[in-house]
Image 1 (cartoon, rainbow, N blue to C red):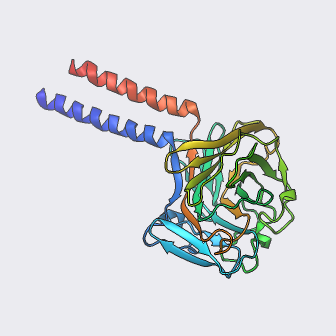
Image 2 (image 1 turned 120 degrees about the vertical axis):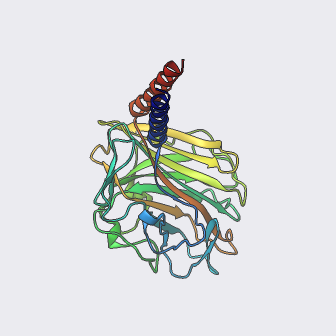
Image 3 (image 1 turned 45 degrees about the vertical axis):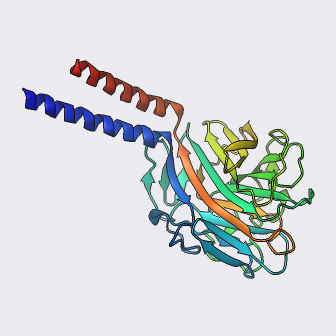
Length: 320
C-alpha cells in the first residue's frame, strides 16, 4: 500500500509539473529572443537555432557584433536607414504551444484571441533634437513576394518588399518632450519597393495615441513594442516605448479597428531610423534585443490555471 501511495504521489507530481509547463507556455510562446550573444550571425537567418539575422539597407555601414549588442556606424551621414529580419524560418510548420496560433509555411497565423508582440531594444549614442525628422518607424509585416535575405546597397528598397501587408508604429524619439508621440498605421500602398520609403505608404488608423512623449537621454537603452490582438472581426493594436533598464512606461497607446481584418499572418519585422548613425549625427546606433512572442487568449490561460489549481487541491485531499 505504501508503494502504491508513493507511485500515486509521483504521478501527481508529474501531472502538476506538466500543468505548470502548460501554464508557462500558455503565458507566452517566444518565437525569437535575439540578444546578440556570442556566436551571433548577422546575415544567416535560422530561427530553429535561435539566430535571427538583422539586415541593413546600405552597404557603407560597419556592423559590429559584441556580446549583447549589434551596432552600426558610418563615416558620412546619408539620411534615413532601415533594418529588417524574419522571425520564422521560410518552410517552418508547427503549432504554437498554448495558443490557437500556428506557423504555416513560414507565416505566423495569429489565432482569434491571441496577441502577437514584437519589440526591439536599442539606443542612440546621441539622441537627435530635430523634431521634424526624428521619428522611429517599426512594423510587423507578412511576406508575399519572397524574402530579402541580403544587405542592400542604397537603402531599404527591394522588389521583395512589395505586396507585404502589415501594421506599423511611428514614434517620436527626441531629446525634447512633445505631445502625442505615437501613431499606429496600416501598410496600405503595397506596390512600392521601399519598406519605409515614405509615410504616404501608410494610412493612420486614428489620431496620434498616448500621452506626452518624454524626452529621451543620449545612450539610454529603450524598448519599442508593437502588439497586434486578433479579435476576430477587429484588430487591437498597441504601441509603447519603455525605458529598458527600469521598465518604466514612457509612452503608450492603443486603437481598435476593423480596417485590416484581411490580415491574418506575419513573418517579418522592420525598423527605420531617421538618419544613419555617424560621428556627426549621433554616433553608433546600437541594438540590444529583438523579441517576438505570442500571448494566448485569456480563456486558454484561465483554463490552464484552473487545471493547475484543481490538481493541487487533489494532492492536498489525498495527503489529508
